[in-house]
Length: 427
Image (cartoon, rainbow, N blue to C red; front, side, top):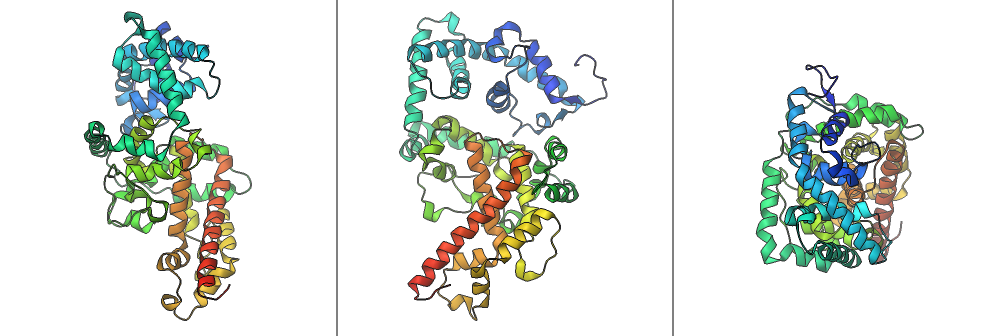
């Protein structure tokens, strides 16, 4: 038991991790800060995704750990001690190889932590092998070669490699089989609406932190596996979400709804921007990370992303200008007002027979059932931020919620204009 913690109490997660980490000693010093605690990137890139795996092990995910799971979490870190020690040594070798190669771009921890963990699993402690410096130099060259050509073709080649397809499909099965039962979590509508009241002008940081610590986003996503729920959120066309295929092709013009996409399709959009590629990891890590993300609540990896999806669901319910709904929060009122000012919305609703208007069915549905379009775009925005390792904080939530609506409006406006021009009409 952690020193100073009563046996009946829950233990703060950070304190427990620091306590277990201290027992690993100097062997993990390259992965530690000056006070001997694990670096923030050590937790984010190594301990969470590769050792504790809170997406699959919900008992390790909260801001506090229940007393019955304390020893189990500590044991997970201590059992990984030899691999983490080898990872630390590989990281030192890789940094030396980076300096010799004259490479200065990118943060070494972001670029090499997970690759060093892979080397530790493959080769063990580099001090016990000959040629370790050459392996480190090769790893650096490979990382930067991949970053220079993180393309759709390389992604397709990776996921269709006959030596990998069965392994990747097995990862999908095991990730989905290990998903915790969502149960019937109590709704947190009051807390979400309270934050939505403050976020447009003065976001409540303490309330945001409480939502994160209490994993409200995870709880709000628990019901998405029930029949019809994900479909009513616009995230799936299926009655229930199902494990994704790995896939071998993708097209921006024919992307399914988010939860129905293959792993290839989920990553495809992010690979089409050179700017975005520069801020992402290498292809193997992206594919494996996406497989685990697909099995997580809201099919997103980070709790702030899940909370933002829950907030978006609450706020977008009121984007119903012509339905007369009274907004339940300041954020909902602002989104409702922005949508209501759009003349093209009134134009579509005035049409005597929308089905005979010549407007494509998918655009007509997007306009008439706006919250579904909104939720799909919000998911895509948050998914992209996770791939680029961009944190979502309280003071950025309103920009996300409002920006998604602006983006959908611009897209719909352009699509409608093109349709009407083809038909010889105008707005």
